Each structure stands twice: as structure tokens, then as C-alpha cells.
Image (cartoon, rainbow, N blue to C red; front, side, top):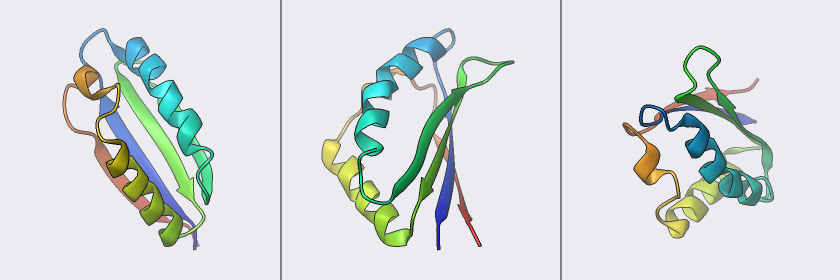
Length: 94
């Protein structure tokens, strides 16, 4: 069963564009991971410092492997550009 994650980031005021640029290399790497069906970042039209990442993974095993890979990478280039920790919502696709 496919797994969908919606991750909301709040960038430091005025840093939304810089956040998106800094996150681009992460996106390129993750899209090559097995089981990644979507990994797309969007910036808010009304609030460009709010960014939403839509993820879709083929199954839980692929998501678990992604989580392990992200932990192994350690910090990301966006860590200093975040106002708060990201908010993660999980949805299972039927």
C-alpha cells in the first residue's frame, strides 16, 4: 500500500526562497531512492515562507529506507532556515 506524507515547513521570515533553493539538492537525491514516487516542494502563494513537501512512497519499507537514509545524511542545508521543526502528516493510500 502506498504511503503519502505531507510535511509542512515554516522558514525564517523572508527566507522561503532561500529555503527552497537550499532544499533542491536534497530533493534530487531523494527522488532517486527506491520506492520514491513523488517528492515535490511547494511554496505558499499567500505566505512564501510556508513550504509544503508532498511525498509518496510505494510502501512502508521504502519509507523506512528513506528515513534511515535521511538520518545517515545528518543535518540538511535548511536546518538554519527553519523557524520551527517540520509538521508531518501521514496518509495511507487505498
